[in-house]
Image (cartoon, rainbow, N blue to C red; front, top):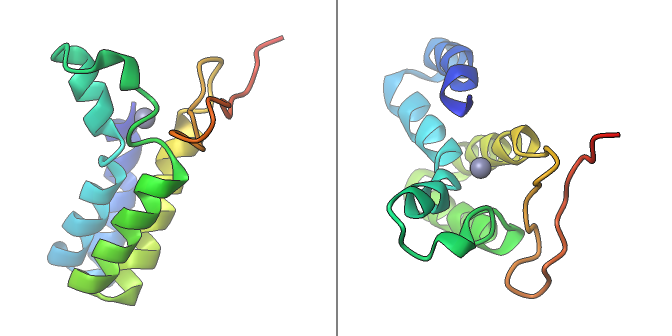
Length: 110
Ligand SMILES: [Zn+2]
């Protein structure tokens, strides 16, 4: 589902910023996907929607993006991570304050 939504985002970014910047920002969207891949590979599967789906990992990613690629890539990349989080707001949700709180940001189905 994430991949599907990132196709139009990539096309827009490519049009405005060029291939290189677009690729970096798209890859940023898939940073939280790492703990999904870990779940699939049975590596610390319980950390799914936790380890890379929280504001602290996201902040570290933002600092690294800023350091390596500059402020514009950092801001757009972080916006794309927030977009990832929004797409994950189903009944399972994300542990947005992990590891300090188990609280899950989610949209409950009624
Ligand atoms: Zn996710």
